[in-house]
Length: 315
Image (cartoon, rainbow, N blue to C red; front, side, top):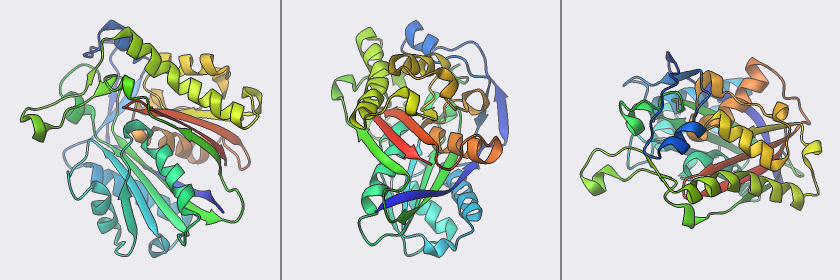
């Protein structure tokens, strides 16, 4: 048994901003230079919460699939930075969708959450579950950075994917994920409730941590290709996390994958955290169709921690 991608959906906030060339993070010049190259990004209003954006993206995925919402057995969701500490935002999303009999989970791997959700969905295919909704929603431009000039590196929005359980291998050929806790400080945000202060996202100033946190993503993708006796020549497309143009180029250089095989939406929407991959998948299947059924896609990303994930998808 496996999972087959059925449909995608997105929601992007109405307010679109043009990126500035001025960035300043807590990580200093080296981090700043990695997170450049953005052109446009979206900023959520007070009404465009993670729950709202996730609901809209999920509803679009349901409409695109042409399915009865009540046929969904499982809802997997992640929000960065969430509306609720508890219950998690995914429960507000299924409430808005009128889904009262689904099993809902939040799996928090920050920017890698979508790929980990794909992994979990594939494992659930070996149970009695038949249809799974995944929703990734990001609201961090103001919540995570406040008024700091990092706006060209990040954007708000949501992406959703519906998969069906099928006989055989399905879309997910293989996936590889792990955690390297020695890189814990690469990017972090303390919990406001724990500190009693207004907290923002911070980055390490350690060159060792920065370089390893970047290279580990491509190294993990290479290990996945090697495990499956594949090379860059076998890949139709790559879809990666998109923290910045320099990082995307570095990953493809290390992995030996021609940059022209990379599909991204960074110039359109910036870095939308865990929603990057589903938003990009939607864009290149619905808006600017390039991906075709049967294409082999290498997806690679990493969550803070650091938690690299790579997946081979036969669309």
